[in-house]
Amino acid sequence: MEKTFLMVKPDGVQRNLVGEIVNRFENKGFTLVGAKLMNISQELAEQHYGEHKERPFFGELVDFITSGPVFAMVWEGENVISTARLMMGATNPKESAPGTIRGDFAVTVGKNIIHGSDSSDSAAREINLFFKEEELVSYDKSMISWIN
Ligand code: DAT
Ligand code: MG
Image: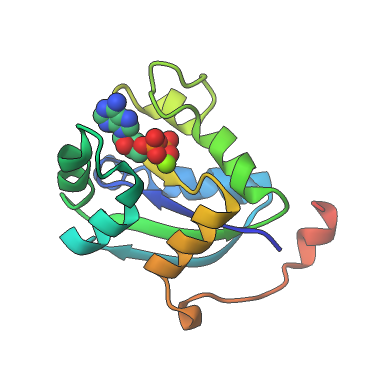
């Protein structure tokens, strides 16, 4: 089953949005298979956002993501990678539709509440970066036959 890496950023944790965000993915019908509240080191931040190294906002991005605890999660489900991106909304909250997480809770691109993998390659890379294999669980929910 497809897996993705999602993370409530420091602004989302500070604004008490962890429960709200977990709720949305649970209600949708996805399955949580790993989660932890953690601080991101400078090194992990630079690795995680490596693709943006040359961008002018890279320093700010690393400072922001290391500024407080994040809630890192792995979610499982059919098409969970692309569906989670739709549920998050556009990167810039100016353009994210109401009803999406960023559309409902964020105002500026620098503080946009949530991260989500954008492809199967990045999902595999990010899950690996944040979680050890033994931190992920595999289980069946009896209600899954009412979802898939
Ligand atoms: P996403 O988080 O939607 O995958 P991204 O990978 O392009 O977006 O960028 C990573 C993060 O970097 C994004 O969530 C917020 C920040 N960011 C992106 N573009 C930015 C910009 N033009 N100015 C400041 N921060 C930006
Ligand atoms: Mg991205």
